[in-house]
Length: 121
Image (cartoon, rainbow, N blue to C red; front, side, top):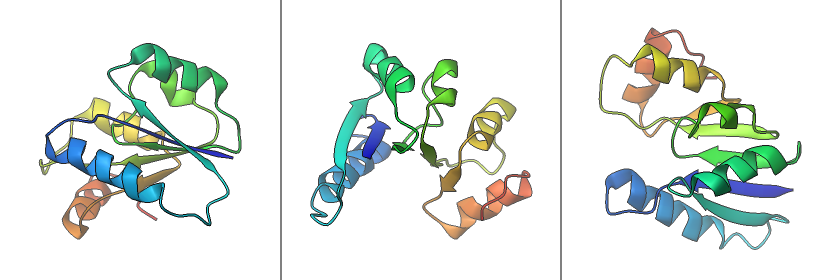
């Protein structure tokens, strides 16, 4: 099993969160998994991941899927839903609805997703 973490490494809040998440995930020595970072800016690498992921892989997206083709990435797809609005665009909600699991950083964000019809577990 491989854990793929897909996001952006930059000085924004979500970019820092992605970097720290990857750094700390790699410290879990009891995980019997390869942990691989994929940068969204490298579209070829993300598309390659979408084509080659195993059904046993866990894919953690720090963006609600990079491109339409990546929505069919094999394995379990987890999306970090990070947003600041109280009403989300239909296209974004559609992409989120394709995830196997949605993580949010707050109770407020969870309530926004529930109000807009997405199950939060």
